[in-house]
Length: 196
Length: 278
Image (cartoon, rainbow over all chains, first blue to last red; front, top):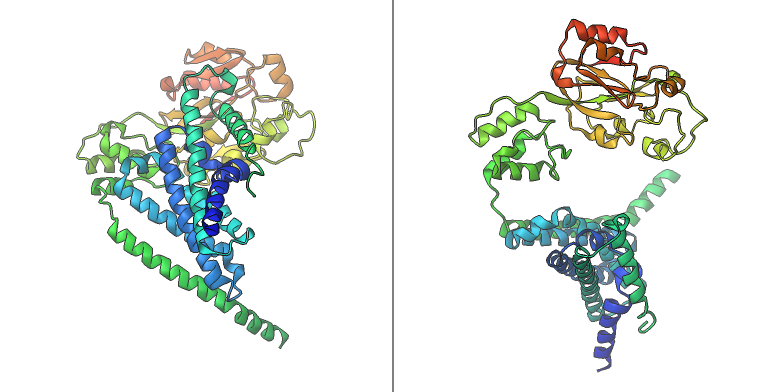
């Protein structure tokens, strides 16, 4: 029972309290780039969730089964990047085959998941936070993806509404988006410290 | 001996890391290879061959993200043919053959022209600019040089040119029209908007190499070779017009004739010049 509650707490923590986008400012590029429409934002969120879960689990396994026992931590970054790039390739092929319109609408942002710092950040955070069991690592990775999806979908929702609102000319486009992102971050700061 | 020992230590310490990386790389290659076979998408062979006919430099002049997206668009809508200026007529011809179309030859090739011909010695400066050596940074300072319109000479356009067609000659960018493909990257790079795409109806075209809209008096004070808006050229031929103290040539009406030659010779500051292949 205790274990389960730890997992649930970890999940809530990474989705809301320690949301990678809103509190660590990672993955801002797709967060602002693909949040024009909700369906695209959701698709992006799902793609990132898949990649981040796969990457988080695999890197944790590689780290704890190969790199740490044999003292090869020096290759950590390269291994992580390898895993992430491979996972992105998989997602790209999958989307191209089964969701061509989504694939088209992502454009350059799909291969750019490779360099999405939220993903590499999560893999490294698993290390920094000393996550020592696999279920926790898996839940944290999945939760980070869900957190990203949550953030990007809220942003897309707000931006869809913004299209119809009377924004001062100087703020139209990128400025109002950045201001919105700032306000959203401040709102999420309200959760800070609830769960460590 | 010391060096040898070091190399052996280095080798002993590094081969496990190398081996791990190699094993991981092989494992991932196999997974991706299998996935590639399983998830293969049939691409229209037409699109593929159109892509092969394009220059594949992804310059974006056509208005699409890259050559592959343009190939897709052209295959779907043949009216988009001829948007690829680096490929020129050759690429359009090939694409037309692939799509079974007949094309008539289009308008003149567009090539960039630099509307400034003031070298370092001809310009006036208020001080020495010692900041970041790029036109974009320098342009942020209002008084970086006396003329607000002239070439800054840090070579942003040279850096943007993938074909090595732009050289900086004495603080002025100079285009080598033998190398230029007309991709328009320099036009986007110039923060002062001095470079303009001009239809080259002839190999060598006449142009007003100045952008200064200051009054004649100010231009003269700032630059030895700027356009002072004296309207002498308009008296020779009405292909020249003067607006905001700046002469402009209607390129469509240019032809190598006596009138144009006289206009060029009569220009007191010599701002009317030939640009193009020698």
